[in-house]
Amino acid sequence: MSKSVLIVGCYDTKGEDFSYLHSCLIKTGLEVLTLNTGIFDSQATFKIDFDSDDVAKAGGSNIMQLRKAIKRSEALDIMGAGAAKIITKLCSEKNIDGIIGMGGGGGTYMAITAMQAVPFGIPKLCLSTLATKDLSQVIGAKDITLMPSLVDINGLNSISRILIQQAAGAISGMIKSTLTDPKTNSGTIAISVFGNTSLCAERCTELLKAKNYDVLSFHAVGTGGKTMESLTLDGCFDAILDLTTTELADDLCGGICSAGPNRLESAAKIGIPQVVAPGCLDMVNFGALDTVPQKYKNRHLFSWAPDVTLMRTNEEENEILGKTFAEKLNKSTAPVTVILPLGGTSKISAAKGAFCRPDIDAVLFNSIKKNLNEKIQVIEVEANINTIDFAEHAIKSMLELLEK
Image (cartoon, rainbow, N blue to C red):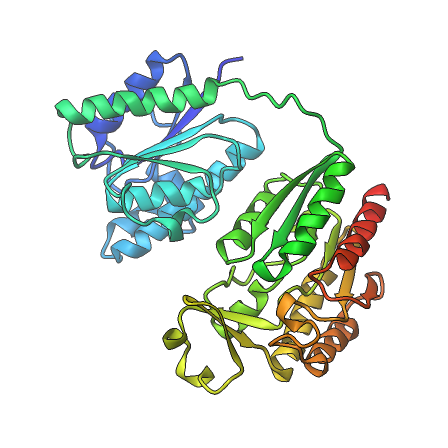
């Protein structure tokens, strides 16, 4: 069966460029599908499978409305969202094996927005004038390859022809490459980790690998949590061992390690087993001391490194965090075990540690237990989270869920 690639882009202003890309892709032997995110009439020479009116309609608007005096940013959002909706359907029906886009600022934004709908492992490439800029906020946790266009994508020239040919060859090579994983394992498990839970996570990884599990660690600094959640939705894991949910505290208090409002939701949404601990919910992360917001200047602060200042969460915040933690897990359709480290939720919350406040931890634990559904098992461990003892309890719980 032939492989297919989808071309996403503005065929109204970049018709000549996309016509050339289309011809290059045809020569690679790929079946080529096309989707137009430009709001005016296409200038391309090829057949369009999903034209701008289809994209606008999928985005909740219509093309004539977008051609009127609507703000450019609104049109970009609508066309990007419409493209993503169409692509989601194509991916669910397994009709595309890769996606390629080209553009300047607006074209890049819409192409990358559309690529958010494509699951991990399906090649995604964008030839862009912005490839050397920081596009992390738009790319997020997706495996998107950026290729610098060097010159503006605005009509063919001696440089753009070469790069468009190479972009076509690159996406073709990625699509046609044979992916092999010679190793067989018992399953794939994601673990969240932080400096304050690293000893525990390392022991958990060791124990799981001894049982022939593939273990993937994610550093809970915001991007790590987002990536873990995204890959979970893409079906990359059989279970989640969420030891380090600190990103919830940063999201609540405006810290630098927030993973956004959807953290701790993906496993529940797709229905895979979870063992979850309130790891490092005793802290909010900021940068250097002088970056801590004024409203927190008189709070209990701890310098973890010259560029990292930790703030101890208080009773009120722990009450909220416990409720949020529980409500997210309550939505799960698969088995969940919550494991509470009564000896502290981080390395520095252990006895005599800088953040050792058993009274505040008790507020968190009580809030979790009060708000959890009865179907969710709660295990209390008389140990600090960053210990071998806690790790072994966590793995025992994980293996029990997997055996079910």
